Figure 1 (tube, rainbow, N blue to C red):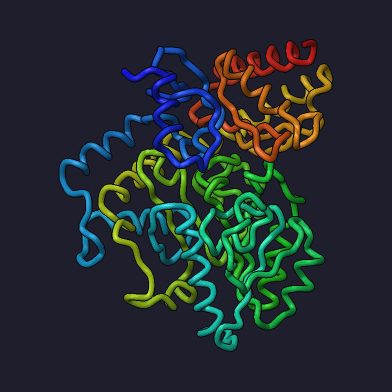
Figure 2 (tube, one colour):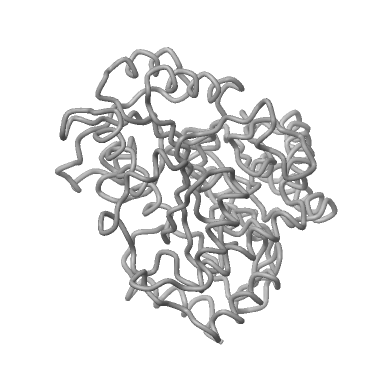
Length: 422
């Protein structure tokens, strides 16, 4: 097997330098663990940015992949296939919508939702041609296509990639007063929002933010678009983050008083358990039916292999009660981090919900402290990654047990306390 050094050297020589990875090479994964080529084992506390909620190489999902891969992998949408309808029914029933449009990646899902929203704006809200606007939030992260970076705050993602796509208005995240003001513009077709801003450092809005946004959008005939690519599929302790503080133990989140139903829902990442690229946009008929044949599509979107994998991935979430596990373990994790905060001056803020959590490090975003801490965590057998300079995101697979979590908390505690003394 190729060594860690050789693998890194090859990427540095032949790969585009569009990422800055932690210097660890992953060669195998199982459940909450990953191994490097030399056989060193680590706890994965990033979960491929929440794509591996079901754990690495879950046998049920891999079984579906193998079975379908030996039968039929791709037909394109020029023909029907015998799996897509099954997936569409499963997804619609699971998430409570009439229709689903399958794609491959999260960014494709966001682009799809933007197109649907604009078309709805012209054909249903009767906005003048080319005048439709979509409201977005500060510090958002929805991907890195040209359209998406056009409304990004991240200069690294947007600088020197113009000209930028027009038609977007930005408001402060978690500010319903600003949102109310801009929604009065009759040319606004939609409001695109992350229920929790993961890439921005796990920013959790006020408890009533989404409910207020839903009410404001309904009053102004504006589509509420929820980007749950990272927060969805049980990560925050409910099937979807828009389920709010639902504490149900069954498949009934949609009946919860805290549930806020968006007009358009975007899913990706854990929709396939990290096994195959699958994303999806869901909406009810009055919104989705604006898309007609030839107006949007993807050769791989809705392929038999991806849709079979996605069904299996969602079955794992349901059958293993991963939302409930994320809710319970998340409460334990934040409680233990609060104890560590009392003992360690390195931690200034703890944020999160379910098993999507972050700690803010007591140093400037331009410092290397968070990176250095992650390097020490790696040496101690746990993999995490900084975001926005001084924030460390902690998001392990949702199949983690309480015993495993406590072992990881011990690693974090040891690393932080030793670092603080050093």
